[in-house]
Length: 342
Image (cartoon, rainbow, N blue to C red; front, top):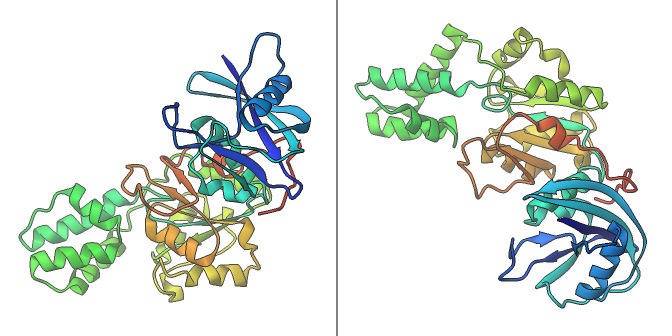
């Protein structure tokens, strides 16, 4: 089965999306309008018919621009310009959205990739702000081990998974929670944690796909920046991994900014390096990272490998660090490249 889906714009460059009704597959999700191709139809003629039948909509300049596969179906995406106003007949709602606004709608699986390609090329991303622990490097096993060792010294054996869950909120949250259970001061735990980490200076492994993504950013003319609560040891680790040269700057604990989700460190980088907010994304593995990005007015990408934060507010969500280059640097949709209406 083949389906035609329309990337239809109005006079101001907004794109039409519609919400599927109850009782249909993917009910309640938004989609680019269209439908199944009948015998003898082209992708363009199929879309023109479906738009007349479902939305009483007339379009012009229809041209097939790309093909995708989703849920066992082949989708032909057809670009065009709306001539008349759509009318609801089968859908429960419609919206004209600027390309960047598409990231705020829950879309059908077949439409998500296309929406991201439109959104992330309006304008294209150039500035990539990276959290360190859990985003660039897999340091959580080491850090959890340090806290677990400290807890054992105080007579408690805390399961690693519980410590990891606490640390995924923040290190200070973990220290506060565990200190209350152990009957000690949180700062005592933090001091011992930082001392252990500095003394052992273990090199955490780089997460899969991260070197490739950092290099892809540079190859595309973009810039990478480090935004971490960690100290200068993060730079040393990146140097030992051969990745420090791929960064154009950053902030660490020594710079004295409030911890994320405070946006101060991101705002500093925006100002210091004259970064355009529309071309900037904050990437991290915790809601505090995306919260800081949201507050600073940049796009955000949450890497949530264990689906710990399903309700976190973010523009993009990834289940792994592999494939990030394709997600964050997608090719433009033909005939839509170069749009800048965010």
